[in-house]
Length: 485
Image (cartoon, rainbow, N blue to C red):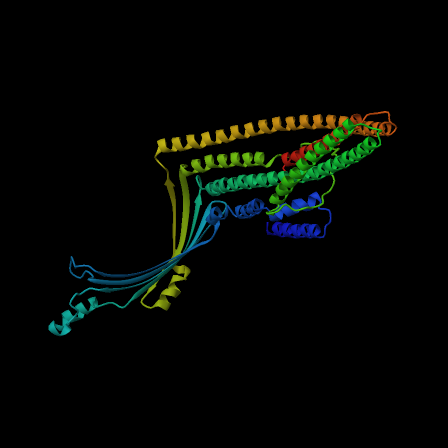
């Protein structure tokens, strides 16, 4: 994803440099500028990059775990019987390393080390105040030297039911990742929609620029006809009515030109806004509109449909997670430990790592949740959520199928109208040119020429708008096919 961001920056800089040189800004370069300069797209890219790491927390279940416990105890318990220890000192150090394998097997390595000392007589031992024989007996209960123990161990635990093959962890991973993939698909949908809007803005700006040119040509022709009518009237070859009609045609063309200038300004502002530019609308040369010829084809799925699929996968995983939480668990385990103890720590270490003091233990551990009503309610809620996700996906499919059918219908209609518009433009041009020659030869009226010129202008604008509409429909089809990031 970082490489994608870098590529977008480079493409945007190249596109901006092309615009600075006054070159034609292609649609491809403009879309690169939008990807680089639009904050909503950058936010979607950053969010999707973070969502790639969504399962990190779940996968920590398979990470090795280390734990350490150090404890010191100083206990003074009143004596209940003769010769019971009065004072106990002890220190314990427990170290553990465990790891859960994908099979559901848990390996645990342990190391225990302890030091203890016992004191039996609260007042201490005064051998001078007792007979020699009794003093020798009592000396056995004097404060004892420290005693050390060392116990390394290995424990293997295997779940045979709930945790078999780490099913619970896998279900949580599917749940988290499906949710992340759904969010990523929705972000790509948003990016695709912005890019579609950008392509639409590009075509609208080309349309506005060309429409302005056509309106300017119309005004120029109207002014020429007005000049011609005024000269004919001055030479008594025409009448004042032709002059008034020509003036009206000029004013009408000026109104059309003013509207075209406003449309161009609005189109430029929308064009610049999508690529992150604000302020005064800029002037830029664009590629001319080209009538698309390829038929619409549905080659992929729109990203909101992809998101609906992942949402359903997430809901299915939620059912598995809920079931796993209440599934009984049966585990078998076995422990191998070495035991060493001595009054000297090095001796205890040597005995603790000797196989001569090997201890073994095996066992079975069974557990289950007894809250059956809670389990049933939880499962019911999860299954209803899964059913809702399936219904939402089915509805989304139907809606997109209907929208695509409508898009194809509009496409066929535009292509039919374009075929007619091509012929109409050629006819109106030929008609206007012929009528102008007839007018020059005194065989037509000024009004007729103006009317035919206006018909030709409207035919050109109509065809231009249809080409833009067809281009936008083609862009919308690409959006439906999932062309986003």
